[in-house]
Amino acid sequence: MTVHFPFQNTYSALPASFFARVAPTPVAAPRLIKLNRPLALQLGLDPDLLESPEGAEILAGKRLPDGADPIAMAYAGHQFGHFVPQLGDGRAILLGEVIDKDGIRRDIQLKGSGPTPFSRRGDGRAALGPVLREYIVSEAMCALGIPTTRSLAAVTSGERVQRETMLPGAVLTRVASSHIRVGTFQFFAARGDTDGVRKLADHVIARHYPDIGMAERPYHALLERVVARQADLVARWLLVGFIHGVMNTDNTSVSGETIDYGPCAFMDDYNPAQVFSSIDEMGRYAYANQPQIALWNLTRLAECLLPLLADDKDKAIEQAQMILGEFAEKFTTAYQSGLRKKIGLFIARDGDEALVQDLLDAMAKNAADFTLTFRGLANAAADSDDSVRAQFTDPAAFDEWAVRWRTRIADEPQSPAERQAAMRAVNPAFIPRNHRVEAVIQAALNDDYAPFEELLAVLSKPYEDQPQFAAYTEPPLPEQRVTQTFCGT
Ligand code: AMP
Ligand code: MG
Image 1 (cartoon, rainbow, N blue to C red):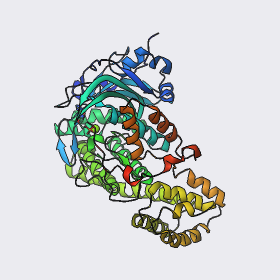
Image 2: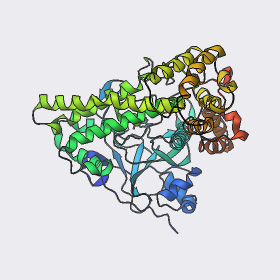
Image 3: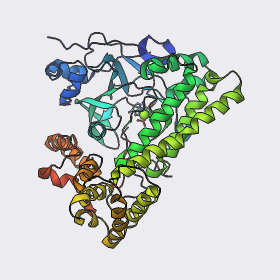
């Protein structure tokens, strides 16, 4: 039996300027580390066959499945605010698209599968550590209910890659509703290729926003939709303490999925200025900057779409600004409603925003763990305050706030048990804490994948108490703290 991928490719049918046809480079000795069996089934793939030696060869790029039309996608992008007219998939190759069990088109892409015409000076490869990090964090995001690319498989290549040291090479199979980025639009716009921009916009509309295809002004609607999805996405990031780390326009998906897990991390102590990425020296992509950076990136998208919005440039700019102007309200609505839920409020009242902000301020002052504070607050809704108080260096700071909180929740009819259940459903117990991710990677480098498997299992049910895994809820000890994360390119 051979592995069958039911490909139905559309991107590779776009004009030749959109991509480069390139096959993965065979690797020495592929070995499957992990197959995401539920995701394989969702994609209409046979997990048993993918776990066979032939399957591992496909997932390592050593063998092409029937019907694959492998391409590296062209894109540009602003990296840390500086425009690079040509980036493109330098170490990723799109095998093709399949329609999943829900009827959604999904890209299947190998990341780390060898050089492409867009590799510049890179080797087209990926090291094991970053592959495992992306696998863990992307699947954790999915379990948390946050739009994201998925990880179908991780394989080791049997080859070493040169980074600061020699490291084991690996390939990640990434699944996305598409890999089209703001930077993909910039690629054509920067070349003055308005026809390319239009063709790309039409493709994105048909693929991600088919209901606006017949709209009177489909390109305005497209910008509106992408603005809405990004506003929602960034709000969700903030609500779980996620820091993307490299919010460049080439890492901003027009579908609104979280994409390109590099030096990303979840924060432990609440600190709005938190930065983990070693390359983000100015803190451009700090936790609390993420909404304004998303808007900056969307503004770059709007610039690309100007020629499609109106013939008159000033009119086009005015219309784009109107749409971009909706971002702030969309973000604030999503973020504030999420925060209200996190503190157990069912309806909105004047003063709620200030109430939550005062809690956040006290958390920042008291080095309170973001995740454990909100999970502890759920306990406090029906049981004891102990677990939440313990997060504050000065527990009296929580007590003072809790008096106001209890007065506020007394306005609502829900029982303590109902409130607690609702709070537990939005305040995770388990997040992929950085020190855990690092420990898993260290074990894997010693060929021990048991910690990787265990962490994945724990993170697949983030909102459930899993008492046997309580240690995974804990923040790092001072000596376990990971203060920097690396891009892993
Ligand atoms: P990233 O920072 O991962 O979003 O990547 C930025 C750009 O660098 C993209 O065009 C990547 O394809 C490219 N790139 C990153 N790592 C490599 C590598 N090892 N080999 C070739 N290109 C790479
Ligand atoms: Mg990228």
